[in-house]
Length: 385
Image 1 (cartoon, rainbow, N blue to C red):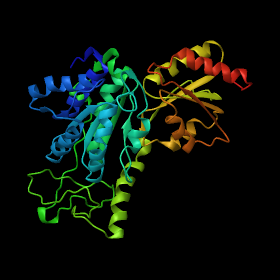
Image 2 (image 1 turned 135 degrees about the vertical axis):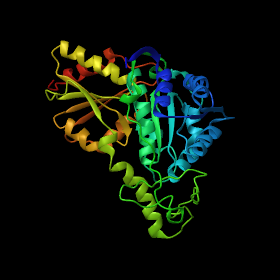
Image 3 (image 1 turned 180 degrees about the vertical axis):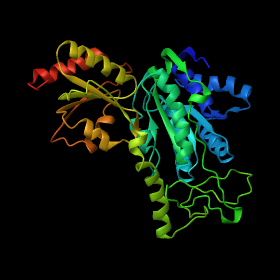
Image 4 (image 1 turned 180 degrees about the horizontal axis):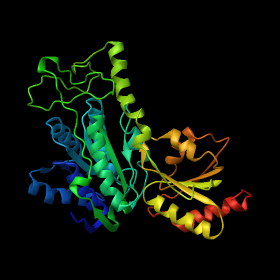
């Protein structure tokens, strides 16, 4: 079958990816700069037997997709900063109940109402630590409109595979820019379905402790009896105060994610093959500028590389350290006052690699020229490049 190529906005590509991955329920509330996702799902879902519902607010939106997922339907919502904040309590509920859901957060400036139409990456930490308690998040960060489509599919697949909420973290520019997108044929896409129970109803444990950390999930109405609660629970879902059961359940939430960090979080590199001493780390739209800055630097005979993660939660720290083993200065470029850089400081030995901030938080993007100027500053201070 001949592939179709379309000129799509990032938010439109997100809709395409969600439908291809099997999302058939969307509950949301319009908020800039994510509204086109809700509009697209409202148009498309009814034509393929799906359901769209506009809720009264973002709290209701996340609640609706949790309920739809428990009923057996792949479900998604989309929002931006203030709405993402409102969703946090129910996102925590989805973590503790291990309910597959996808939450698209198109970042804008904040806090509060902030900058509704301006770009930001200031939800970097909220994506991993937005709700209270011990849990481990998955947050994917595409850097092209083509990747928005593929990462939306990946987000749905990961949510089904690990029985967990997955966040697709875009930014305003990534959501609204238009690029040529190669639409894959259905037979070219891997589609993951959640693990279903194979045991008789009397043997079924909705939160069974398994070797993989992932329990089979029966849907409402399948004939399996189980309890769902936001309280710490045992394998049947009933509240527990038994220390060993508490530890087992919280360890389960952790291990099923961190054990797979290296496969969830991959890295794209540019100019890293000849072991540069200076590198740029970034994600999203900033990674596009970093890639161009490497080209400019190389034209000026400055050996510089760029590295970007495809997920910031969980971060594949072993792979990151290996890629940075010869880097002496790491420029961390981001659209906030310093969130990704603090994450890097936790995982990188600063006695070996100096971490240099490049931050912008005025609602505008970081340009390749600004990154190149930072590279020249490093050169000016006598560093080997």
